[in-house]
Image (tube, rainbow, N blue to C red; front, side, top):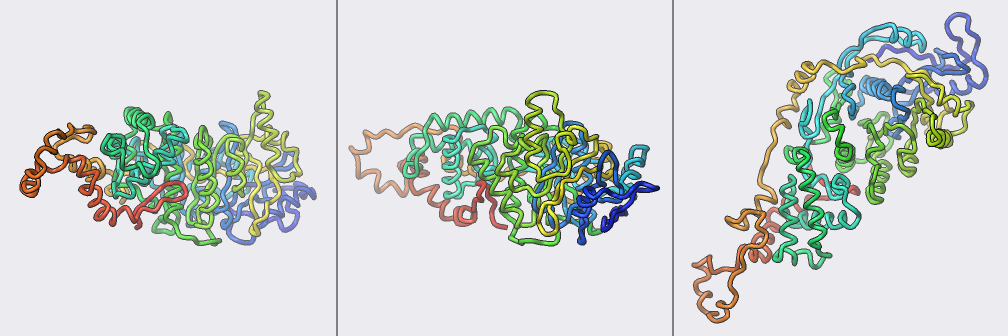
Length: 543
């Protein structure tokens, strides 16, 4: 745990030496951050061009599950702010999840390196800086990159999130939801992409089309769009992200043996060019936690704080159903003890309904070089409560590692807006060596559990088995000759028990009472009834 020391400004403090006391406006701001309970130390107050080192700016630990926003232009220090908050949460015993887009957050596992800049920053804010590494686990989507593989099954990922990845329109999304509903009801687990493709293909065949007749049906054109999207998605190397063993998001809630919270770092540099994928996958992780965690109400510390980097990618091109689900998930997950911080460039990147759910705010510098920048600056200023600062001037004049902050007090009320010089992280502010990272991954107790992909029997194999020797892509097998059967109605009947060849075709058995009814009875009882879909359409078999 950090040995940092903060002096609450109960009276007008003085900076080191003979610096004058705080002016009344600054004293009022500083007093708004003099919390009595556990809190994270963010930095020191900036006022009238001076850093008032003894006027600490803090955020109460119980308020970290009231969500937040970290925003600012490129190069203003957002990543280091994440690192600063994450390591203090870990020190307080709170697990943290970090999405590492650029690959520079792995250093949180190693002690920081002293230097002139760190020394100067620590002196500015009266920070007792001690090099400290924090317990960390490293993950990678589908094993693409360095980290423990994180996979999801198609069934649990759900139709809403999958539609966003495939860029389906509203009608196509609804049809995909119908396919998932059918598979859930029949106990057909969609583990990977080939499972979903097999079910879609069957439901659009002549024999399978009747299965959806009573609940809306699935047009050949829409199914074709879905199948083409799946093929293109797989051609881009995305198939590995779906499958088993499926990652259990409860792993993110672990603490280390010394009581510190584990920092889970999802390494995403290898999928930087696939923003729709990783942003939506992050939402699945959050939705899965929402689906599984019990209600806990207001607690003295969060169970997990989840940092959602490059948040604008999540909302680009999102459907209304998707945005509604994000809003509802963010609103409700607070009562399950999870805090969510969105990290992006400007607040306007986050929809207003989501922004309204965020209680804590760290706003780094904004640039105003163009008319659009000016509009974004004015819109940002309007989102802050009343301020003693000229925020348009302050926000364009902040240096790297400085921010305008407002948080929720211990009573849940917004604190005064405070320009702040932030503390320096105590862990390494650079990536760890690749060899050290690989060694940490392979030494993790989770590696053996998730490293090797498993392809067990699921919808694809069951459809293939039901069709005998026919491949799953042969959607419409040759039809039996119908003319000969009416002429000899009595002959097939006695031979039917002894002569399986004379029974209805395999597909007719599947559509009738053979495969799917038995699946609904056996597997459906075991799996189908256990599937409950959350507000986001995600699902997980009950643990």
